[in-house]
Length: 320
Image (cartoon, rainbow, N blue to C red; front, side):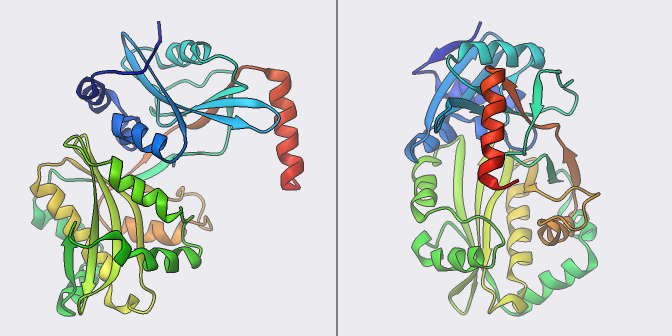
């Protein structure tokens, strides 16, 4: 039976997540990520049972009460289908319970409603159990060339040495090009304040040219996985190919630290060449790796009538 907890042994929680969480996105169920979500105004509730843990975000719906969302979870070593139903029943007064199915083998139930993916269902990951030479040989030949070009242009890579204020303008510039949805500056600052433990470590990786930042990544290490959270680059210095060298140095550093996986996060599905992520997908796939496909995001409806009304209201607001 699921129980709501206010306090818990953080180390035990994280160890369970590391052992049983999904290959990509397990950090979303870490104790630290829940604290970060609280710091940006989310209502976070945590639940555990004998064979599962779940960090859940409860959000208001104007005119429709509230719903609960469990990112990349719940996490369990038992029957996922049963665990989801029991957890949804534990959280009262919700219109629906939303969750990202973290296992491709899960059998979707008839009362699960497929919705737009909150977390990417297609990801690209690089295994780090190969030699540095083998990894380099596995790069696309143009990527190898671009890494060499950046090195010849004396691009310097720095980890955790540049403060966020110094690179914020690059995020604004990249966001203005429509390459990703830009959060507020406070959102990123809260990341660095809260994701800073031995278990869950965020850091800034910056490519410098003539002592000026030209590309920057926000990275997170958790559970043996280094995750690419956010990235930005200067359009003016795009010919320097700094992002290629930046990611390559991050991969080698992760390998040297004993991490097992480099998680690039979302990519476009292979059968959708015109997907908005097509360009960034080509970049990510120029590095060695494999595509992982998850089942996606679903709603377990708690109040069927009002859920239909809610969906209709959403379509009307969007003009669909």
